[in-house]
Length: 79
Image (cartoon, rainbow, N blue to C red; front, side):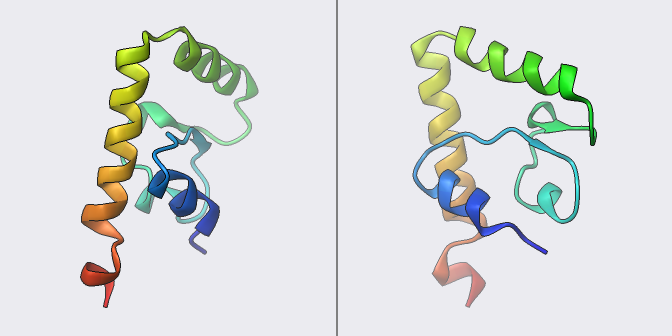
């Protein structure tokens, strides 16, 4: 199913990095944030990479996460 925790996090502007399982690719469409299942090395690398970004780049990631929810999963669009 669709993990609501991803929608909740992104609606608060929290960027999400996840393994590409189930319906997650319906929520996370930025391929750099989708990790092949069980690739723990790549997951670690992506998390470290995120925190090495500049503050501006992290803020942009937060804005994109929130915009994704607002434009794809908002109540006005889904209903």
